[in-house]
Length: 95
Image 1 (tube, rainbow, N blue to C red):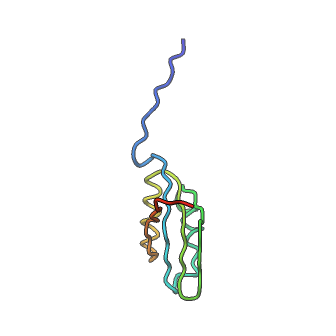
Image 2: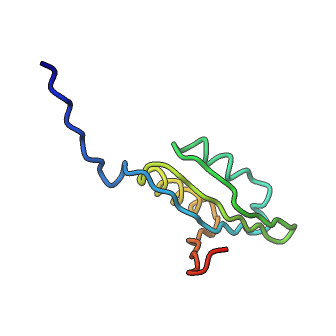
Image 3: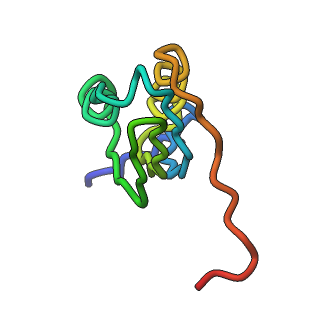
């Protein structure tokens, strides 16, 4: 008789999450490939939801998906690079 394996409960750092963020780049950072880099440095999936880039500012709505710990490390890395990171607040009325 084969005994079924017990399911291990996921720890908070390995629980999957999906987070939407606003990234705001100052002019000196606009040409740096942060989204490509963060997707390769960390075990996460990136999805650009909206973007507006000019010579003066870059604003990107980026969705990150992966283990909670990896997403947290990716956000910390972006901030360390000089990118302003804010959570997207989803309104009550979605269209």
